[in-house]
Length: 99
Figure 1 (cartoon, helix red, strand yellow):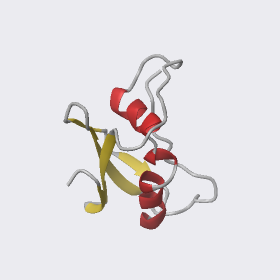
Figure 2 (cartoon, one colour):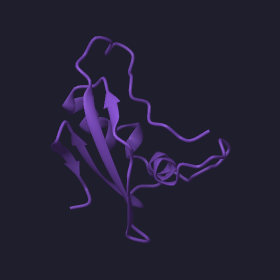
Figure 3 (cartoon, helix red, strand yellow):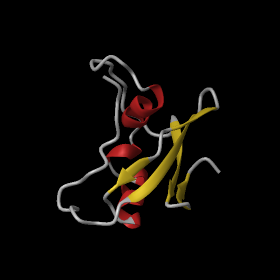
Figure 4 (cartoon, helix red, strand yellow):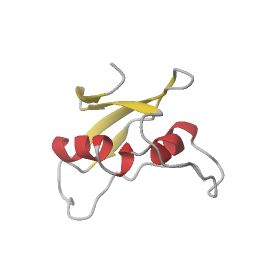
């Protein structure tokens, strides 16, 4: 099973969907990968929070999205700063840690 982003959140039913593109950079190798576009049922401020300070801000989750492991049992340590992201929602950059 390939790791997938959770894009539909409780209480957000009926919201306009945002088309979101996420690029993740692994700092140790400078390698970047762009995830397939996803549809999110969040407003821009909540989406920015999710990636900047929420669950997707932790390196353990960013590593899963970066590596897309086939193994559901793969474990990644929690840390901060090993992966950077650029998040674009409906063509607007809402978070750019990559620069």
